[in-house]
Structure formats: C-alpha cells, structure tokens
Image (cartoon, rainbow over all chains, first blue to last red; front, top):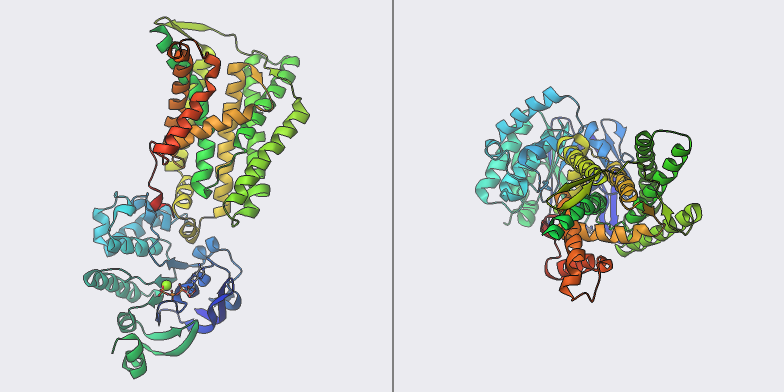
Length: 234
Length: 307
Ligand SMILES: Nc1ncnc2c1ncn2[C@@H]1O[C@H](COP(=O)(O)OP(=O)(O)OP(=O)(O)O)[C@@H](O)[C@H]1O
Ligand SMILES: [Mg+2]
C-alpha cells in the first residue's frame, strides 16, 4: 500500500533522514521504532507532506504522492496523528472531530462515523462540548486519533501515541489501536515505547540516526538480543 | 448630562466604524500573525471608490439611495480584489521570512496605496456629495441622524454575519482551525493558502463598508485618511485582544466611546487648555496603556495556546 524508496529529509544542513526504504502492506500494522532524534517524526512529516523531502520517492497505492500538497493527502486516504496530538485547543471535542471530516461531503455518513468513533472513546462522548485545550493529555490523544478516523483513512500514521501518558492511559490507547487494526485499518506506528509497538504490530523497522538498521517481523525483533539491549532496556 | 448622552451616541457611531476596520486587522493577525498596516489604506481606497461611483451615478441621474448602494457594492468588490492582491503579491512570498520582513512590506504597501490614491484622486480634500436627506432625531436633549442609525445598524448586521460565517460555516471552521494550528489544519484537508486569502478578502470587504460609512458620516475624504483611521482601528483590535473577533468588535465600540467622551470633556478637564480637536490623542493614550498593562487586551487569549 505504501512504498517508500530512498526517502531523505534535511533541515538546512542537517540530514535528519538519510535515504530510508520501507513498505507497509494493506491491512498491516508496521512499527517504526528508534531513539530520540532518530528521524521517525521527520519521516512521518515527509509522508504527510508537512515538509518537502530532500530526495527519494513515496508510492501510495501505486501512485507517486510526493508532489501532492498536504491538504490533498487526506482525500487520498492518508491521515496523520501528529506527535504532541495537535488538537485545536479552542474548539470543542465535537468540532475537532468534525474538522477530521473536513474533506468529506457526505453529511449523513459523517454523523454515523461520529457515533462509531465516539463508540471507541466513551470518554470523549462525555466531554463532547468541552474545549479540547482543557482535556487531559490522554483525552487529547484519543481526540487526535478519533479526529483522524473521521476522515475515513485507508492508511493511518501514528506518531508516538504513548508520549507523556500514564501507563494505564497508554494501555487504553493501545487497546483502541488494536481495535482499529482489527477492523482492517493499515497502520504505520512510530513509537519510542518499542516493546508496546512491537507487541501490537506485525513487522517493525528500527531507525538509528536517520537510517533503518534492522527490519523484521515484530516477534523476531522482540526476541533479538541486540534490539532488546538497545530499545527494551535489557 | 446632554453632553454625556450626545457623546455616547457619537462614540458608538464612530466605534461601529472602528470595529469594522479592526476586524480586518484582527482576522489577518489571528491567522498569520501579521499586522497588515496597509489595511487602513484599503479602507481609504474603499471611501475613494465609493465617492467616484456616487459622483458618476449622481451625474447620470440615478436616485441617491440606489447610487449609494451601488457605490458601496462596487467599493466592496474593488477592496476585496485589492485585499486578495495584497496578500498574493506582497505577503505570500514572505510567508516564511522573518517576522519583521512582512511588517515592513506592509508599511511599504500602505505608502504605495497612498500614493496611488493621491495620483488618482489628488492631494486635496474631497467633499462627499450628501446622498441621504439628513433627518435629525432627538432623545433626552441629544441628537442623532438617520445616517448614524444606518451606520450602526449596518455595522451590527455585518458583525452578526461575520460571527455566523466564522462559527457556522465550513470555511469559518477552516479559518478557526488554521488560526489555532495551520499544519494540523492542512492535515485535515484545509487549503491554508485559500483560508489566508479569505481572511484578507473578508477583512477588506468589511473595510470597504467602513470606508463608505466614514465618507457619508464626515462627508469628506483624503488620500491620507487611512493612516489615522487604520491606527485607531488597530488600537481597537489591540484593546480587544488582537486575534479575537469579539474583542475587535467590543474594542472598536469602546474606543469610539472613549474618544467621544474624551473629546466632549477634554475642555472641562484641562480648564479649556486643550480643545476637542485633540480627540485623536485618546486613541494613543489607550494604546499605550493597554500595551503597558495588558498587552493581550481585554479579551485576549493566552498566547500559549497559539500554535
Ligand atoms: N524543525 C526542525 N529544524 C531543525 N532540525 C530538526 C527539526 N525537526 C527535527 N530536527 C532534527 O532532526 C532530527 C530528527 O528529528 P525527529 O523529530 O524526526 O526525531 P524523532 O525520531 O521523531 O525523535 P523523538 O523520538 O524524540 O520524537 C533531530 O536531530 C532533530 O534535531
Ligand atoms: Mg518524534
């Protein structure tokens, strides 16, 4: 579904991503793990066209997309849940969710999806009218995921959904991610919490200073002594 | 007592105009963080265009009310195009430049527009032909005219319309989202360039109407009138909390009232040392006080949640 070939990202003179190649198949959940500053977010931002890649190409469903502007990707079925959630703080939960469906014109279907998404996140339902800026970090993360789902994506890009959350909230968020995957969503999951990410995904890539150094099935990565030493704190 | 009521009435009239102009500053600032100093000149061009159309139509024997309406519509369209062009030509290429660059460009654009206006309409004061048979009403010893009623009513309608647009329509939602987090808004499918252009276009349309109002209220126009008007409206926007629409409306009215009351009482306050022609200083006193003690304005949002 997604084929990334030799993708490079640079900020001024700094090379953040140095020609990485990976792919995500339809219906798969793939984890991209790595330490701080490895270039994971830069990769996702380049995929979502929030920045111009310095090189390489990205094929999505057989079509080159690195020339499309950011606002045209969502209609292609790509949704990014950005690092730090990026909810609209002075909009209510409901408005945030409706913003997720901004690119759609099928009002009735949108209302159905709203019910479906709120089914995943009962807490958001209770807080429908509350301003998103006043939600807790975990609630904001739920909102950001729910908002992305409102666009009916075919490919969901998640950037560190566990960041800054208490373990119990992380469990909740990851349960929802599993549920979404079980519904057939294709997911590219970026995480620093390598253990969790490898437990929920089928395949994984390890990123180090802008390069992919290891790739394998997630279960094998979990068992790999080097990965365990470097990313699972053993 | 009559002075108080009288100055309140005058203040609200003026304030309604300031509010409409202030909205143009605040919308653009809210979305791209730019103080569009050329906005006052857009308003001035609105006044001038309305003037030209009125004179032309009056000479052609068109009835006054129709002439006034057409003049307003034409100036709205001209200003919308002007606002759009300003953004497209002067500001968009500088979107990622350091903050000071577009600000200086804005000042440059206002000088350009003043000079264009001077070339077209001359350097002298232009007298607006009175189009409406002025009627004077009286309450409690104070008077107001039908022109004032029209100005306040129209301004109120436009503000209600704007609030509806921003809170109840899709483009309005896109504008609010862009103001709060442009990158994420684009992830939702919002075309940021379009939203920014829209902010300029709508602000300029409101400015054009305000320009028409100023012309019919003072019955006079001048190529430099946009400077003072713009500065006062900018003060109103800062007073209300720049970036905040309701704040710009309230700030406009408040500034108009402060100014009118100040002008009404400045003689008494200074033992007739200063006369009412000093009314302009009040806007600047307000601006300085707000910037010193409450730079986020009366209804300002914490800057922290601006993305
Ligand atoms: N806007 C930017 N300007 C300059 N350099 C940047 C910018 N964003 C990221 N970088 C640099 O690019 C490199 C990769 O950053 P990136 O955010 O992609 O890492 P990451 O893998 O997502 O890290 P983390 O796990 O901490 O989120 C880092 O060295 C970072 O300093
Ligand atoms: Mg990151």
